[in-house]
Image 1: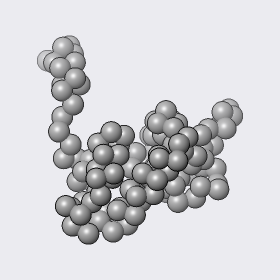
Image 2: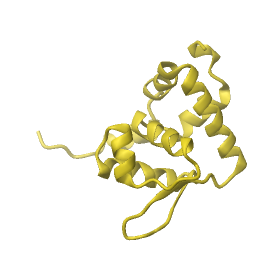
Image 3: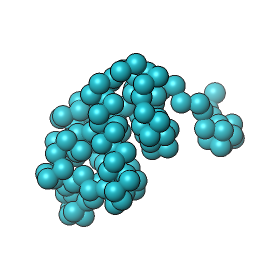
Length: 128
């Protein structure tokens, strides 16, 4: 699969929802084991990140309606899309990633900048 062969549904999903390779890897990991609950520590070990980063990404996926949390003191997360369309999009993403990993990752890093974010960043005060 060449970069131009990546389905539009995958391109659109990545453009709208995936802002980092870490988020992508987290999503694909929980997608690969939908009947299992994942702790941030398990995710961190599997995708080679820190537990705090894994927690942040898992919570992003909760906000996107792709994962649920058991809301325990030490939460665990399960892949559970809130809509069938989301499940279908993630299935297509997983398939594209299996066949063209680099092309999918390039979609993340070659996104055009978000004009609203760029505008807001222009007003951030920085120490010089």
